[in-house]
Length: 128
Image (tube, rainbow, N blue to C red):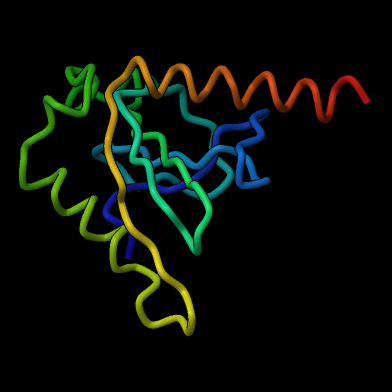
């Protein structure tokens, strides 16, 4: 199973043609379709079947165990390595699926990616 809660950021449209993926690090399991106010702390830049696939890493603003983090560089090294490893191997058993984590970036890049995905959503869905 996923190393943290996995979902999407509403009202975003990423380069892969889906809402922007988000991994929410927190103390509790989040039920599907639950909205949680979060702050981004970084991004995993991946390649998924030859396509760019960015995964925002975020923490809930009201979770005292995680809201102290403001950048992925502050996460415990082993915890972050577990997340990276998961996304490098999670599609291994699927035929003809290849993924890799190409790099990670901090909070500023994550915010830039979110803003771009919001702009794409507005352009492609609200202006139509």
